[in-house]
Structure formats: C-alpha cells, structure tokens
Image 1 (cartoon, rainbow, N blue to C red):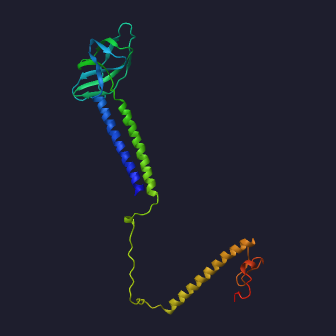
Image 2 (cartoon, rainbow, N blue to C red):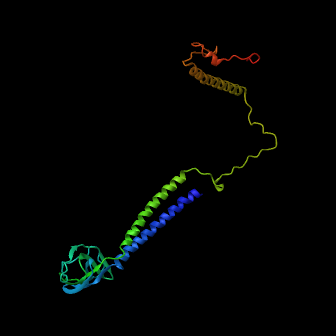
Image 3 (tube, rainbow, N blue to C red):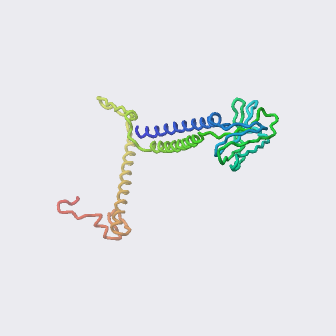
Length: 278
C-alpha cells in the first residue's frame, strides 16, 4: 500500500499547487487591474487644460481617463490626444513613448494607458493637454504608475508551471508503480473452499466400457508409447551425432549406426561381471 499511497499524495500535492497558482494568478490580475493600479498617483490634467505636477524620476504612465455609460470592452475608442511636458530649468526633456494598454472600467469610470514617460529627474513639470474629446464625459490625462505588485504574477506563474511539472511526474510515477509487482494484501487474496470427501464408498461409474472402447484405448496408449520412444531415441541420437562429429545413418532394428563405429561406445556400455543387462 505504501507504493500506491506515494503517487497519490504526489498527485494531490500537484493538484493543490495548480489550484493555488491558478487562483493566485487570477486574483493578482484582478487586483492589479482594479485595486493596486495607481494610474493617477501623480495627478490629472483636464483635456484641454494645463497643470503643474510633481513627477518622480523614473517611468510614469499617462492614461486617458473619462466617465462612460455602459461597459466598454478592450476596443474602447481613444480620441486624438496631444500633450506637451515642460521640465524645470536645467532638466532634460522627458522621453515620451506611445504604449497603448488595456481598458479598465470600474463603476462607469474608465481609463486606458496611452503613453509611457521616462522622467530624467524628479521635479515639477508643466503639462499642457489638447484633443478632440467631444462626447466624452469629464476627459483628462492621468499621470501615475503601474501596480507595485506586478511581481506577484511572475510568482504565481512560476508556481503554476511547477504544478504542471509536479503533476506530470506524479502521473508517470503512478503509472510505473501500478505496473510494478507487489505482494497481495490479505483483503485482496481470494479464498478457496477445500473439497470435502465422503467417507462412504466411491460411486460406481454411470457407464460400462465396451470391448471396442477398451481396445481403442489400448491402441491409443501403445501409439503414444511408440511415438514417445521414437522421439526420445531421436533426441539421444542427436547428442551421439554431436559427440561423434558427423551425421549418423541409424539402423533402429540393430540399434547401431551403420556409417561409423565411433557411435557404438555411446550407445552401449561394457558392464562389469555381475552387472550385465539381461
């Protein structure tokens, strides 16, 4: 039973690992999209409009933020937008790269990443926004950063891959252990009832053999003896031919080889006086 319990425990552990990784990965994706995403951490600028925002050094995201009716999908239309960013005196101009991301909507509040800005130095930057935003409710550009817990996706993704490897290894182990021989457990052994013998006389046969049946049985027994004797003789003569080193021409009536005298020593033996065969 230990050989079977090992693979079962391994399969159970692999399944638990897969479930934990799957639930953790889905939860991380949801939380990063709706809870941990700080897309407006540094402030917002209305469209059109101007504002001064303090931006830290490093990467910052620029997202289009508006109110919508209904639930827009990933095909949410982004209007024609422009913005300019003026750094403080003596600071290089930030590098802006277009990087459209997925659409996130919570209670009719929608935002989608449009640009990524590489801020060379922390400071207060003057931002001017423009765009054709007719039909959008309270449109603005939000400056922030992605979730700080993005590394959790890699953790649960790696755990998911580990679970797949564990499950594969456990299934192979289970298949091999199932093929391996093992002693039967007491509950797996079959019991046979011993035959009971009657103390009385044996019952007489229900038929009487005929004379023809007896003769046929005698002929059958004689034929079996003849065939077995010939077969035994042929096998023994094969050994004699091997010892002599040549093919034998055998005279069965005389019980001797007619083409060589070397076989006689293997067919007959000289016995001491008093031990001869009659």
